[in-house]
Image 1: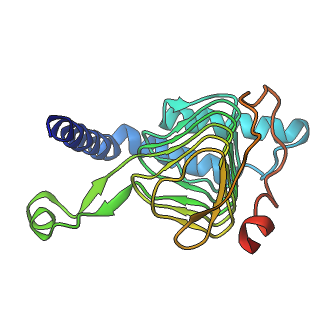
Image 2 (image 1 turned 90 degrees about the vertical axis):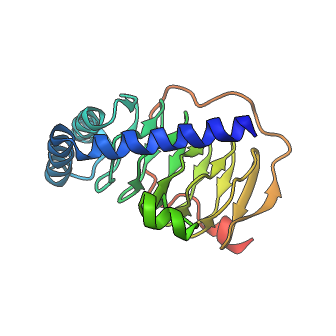
Length: 219
């Protein structure tokens, strides 16, 4: 009971911090700069010009959220907020939406048009009336996970290490490590028995244009 109270207080404090941070003038300026630079830059991640464009995009994304590692790939149109954590060798596809409190661990690849919703409407009508409409519950994606395109991940979800989420899935509850899940709502379809324990190496990942999809959708 005591632990539940502490957890609730921590979540409320995190929510207040994110809201206050997003309302600061400096944060709004950083967000506007990131969006403008992203609009100007080409959608390249290969070749000399692609690497330069990605480094510039990542530079401005890191000004917005200090939890973003410099060794990541962020494709054009990715929507960033303060409080986002992207560890080393993460690849974010085109037009991905990353809300407050999203943590994506090392080696994860996220397909285009995927959305992470840490915000949700409070289920208790009294809380909605007196404490505001929304609550923030963090999302965590484990190392070397693979998130297909057009996936929706809802608030409070944890996705385990080495897990694959099939295209167009809606993840409403936490998914364990070393498995493949898909559907609406997403459910485990396959367990990976022999998954290596080593995290991704230091090389940059290639394009995520046609990542995860067919297998996850047809299981």
